[in-house]
Length: 461
Image 1 (spheres, one colour):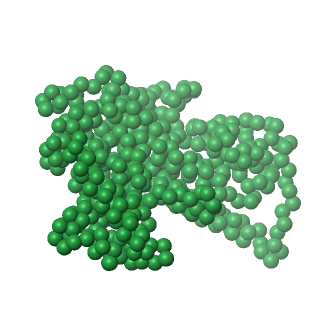
Image 2 (cartoon, one colour):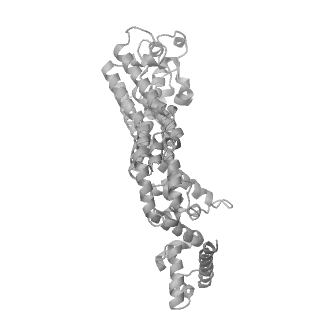
Image 3 (cartoon, one colour):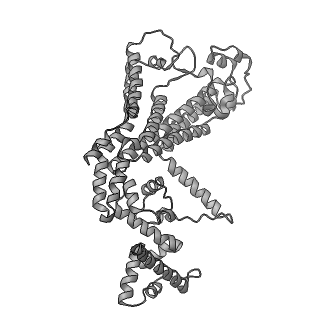
């Protein structure tokens, strides 16, 4: 164990770059903010240091540094302290004949090399997202200090609203603001969820490289989904050309826009004054914009719930089409299986009952936070559910038998003491047009043969 403990600290020199690079970048910006010369026109990232008040900018840098370093710090701390605790727990739970597998499996996982790729990826994603959230300041004129969007924006942020550039600058800036807000709060929601999931995995002895990969993908997907959501928050007046004066004032460096736009006739309600119409428009836009950060944040916090809802709707439609019957049984059929447990098992590749029924409890205990006894129970439940399929819930409700071990024990005990165990079970099970008593008898007899075979074969090998 001493050799194993020492190997945890044997990190390659390039592994430390995940700490050194963010610290160097952020420290360089902080020094530029504090000691950099005034009036210098930078054309690289150093210009960011002069977009804000120095004290406010340095405060943002401290928050950004904490947000970035929490990723590699938790990974390294987990490897040094929590991994050995998990190995000791597994040695107490797993049968004696299989304890030799634990040390080899844990030795491969309890080193920074196993986390290297996922931690580097997640650190870069957090660094980029936090930069957009805390450092990038959008401005709409070259006379201001920040990212000058009067020069244009990419299609990811604008989409079909790109045509507003030059036609209606006010609407162009309005949509650009919505896109940036949605992207930032989508990332923020995903990051907050990621921190919670990492903390939970840390204390549950379940912090694997998959946790960081899942978090990185979540932050990417949630930010883009929130950005796409922002396209729904628009006003019909966005596509109405603005007056020439507004266009010229919005693009002070350009003279060609003044001949492009014209003021269209606007129909007004004679019963309402222009002031009332403007107040209604401002109120509507303000209400929708106030909801955008909230919706974007929860898009980032719960993207998988949204995906699962969409998936279930699609599968329901697909099932109604002949030849497209999706037959896999969901993990939610198993006793004690929560939504969080489903997500954790799906991360290891077990997304339905049929897959889980063939899993190895010892291997999964090493890879996840679940105890060996809990996994063994779920796998045995999955085996029985995979064979009984839609009849499994009714069978459990009538007999109280939930897994293959309990069924095998019933066959052995009742058959040895009182007679035919299959007949006894069939007598207590419900029957209908699809499952008659004879059908139950055939199915249970087949299960008895399979259980007896599974017991004999390991003994022969």
